[in-house]
Image (cartoon, rainbow, N blue to C red; front, side, top):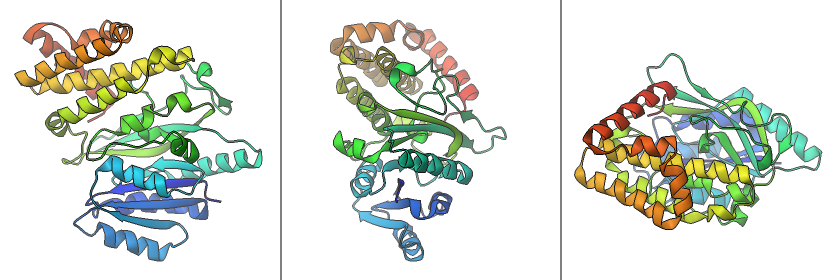
Length: 338
């Protein structure tokens, strides 16, 4: 049985994609690896097909026209045959021991006639030049060794929200809710994580350091210079998430609070990127974004705007923007992102 379909979106990934693929192969016939070649112009397709020839029962290759990371995820999901679905970026990798522990869990659930909608595990920031690798875990926020629901969750710190790196969704759930990410758009991993949340009923947290999130390439989308250059896409994703749900209708109080806090983080990231660009036009875009949230849902706007993140991002004047930027720089060093 194919327990997990791993989609690996690849665009000109010839120099590093092998590590991602090789890290999943130990899963054997209980996994499938969907290498999605997103219109690459280098040897990505050639390398992918070589893996397919060597591991025909595990690896499949999807060659497509360039549509961006989100469109590659869409193609992978459409082709997925595994019970659960996981995205691994082509410059990241997974831990072999943790992979075997996850497969054991899925095997045991299947034997017990159980299934879950979402599995959460830990991820590690593999940042170039940093000796101490930061691991994001959820021990204080999520129950362990049991299936639980949203009303059972605890408090999440700002540095431990559930990201694409830490989540595995049930494949049929994603297909049922018609998950479809925008084409030619960066930062859609936030949509991927956020959109399914109200549809998730059964959750399991496995405390293993599974995903290795590489940070260090100059052309990465999370590089600050690239984020500033692509600020309009960050705004687009944030607005898409604002429009996605009427959060007042979310039945679980704890899930609603989690989603509000996630939006607060999105507003903060968008705001700080616009502030750090130091361009007047981007400062105007920041004001417009907050106005957009206010028009959409005043109560949610009020909670976010006058929470600690919202206040930090909206200190008046040039000196206020310097303070906001300084706070971000300190947080970046502590947390280890970008």
